[in-house]
Length: 250
Image (cartoon, rainbow, N blue to C red; front, side, top):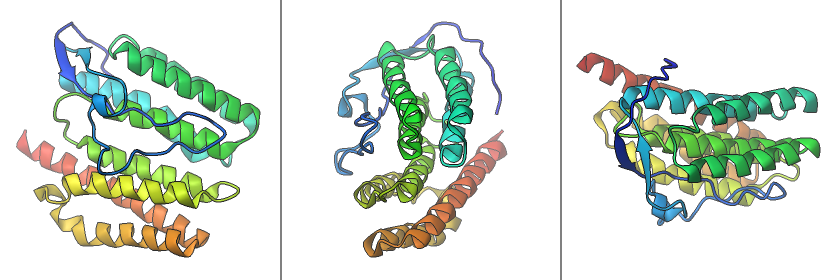
């Protein structure tokens, strides 16, 4: 994606979904699906404003800043603590790079999560590194303004899949948080499943979500990890179809 950084001021009122509990000793918890929305008022950030001149450019900046956090989550369990430290440095630099275009509350939230990430890394707790990293990812993708080509809910399905998979790799496995991640995923999916772009993927995606839920009910780790991978692959497909629809309009 482009890494454009040219922004002239124009105020856009927007809402952002922040992370839930950042205690690195316990997994973050998603709000109840019935109350969890993409509004700032739902998560304590309050109403905020974002200075932008160009939605696509700012969207590109925010998504680019989210990428190192996604990468950190993917490698948290396989990397050595020093390697994770380098990845954390990259993620922190990315967060600092967008400080000028996001409300202060978001910068504070990212800083808090980064503190949790560093503490977890120092204690060699990869699951907590991965989960806190995904909360940073969630905060950044939820701050995307306007109506992006790839809906924010698609990015949040990515978040849900990575969170679920990190829980499945924790010791002990965090089944309760995996169940909460599924409630969150169902809510996000319900927002986009009726969109024409998603029509061809509905049956398969429903099957994947059901498989993830069954794995939690059975507390079957291999099944959980396989279904999480399938969900993340399906999210990639969702991103592609939405991007294709947007490209066909231009």
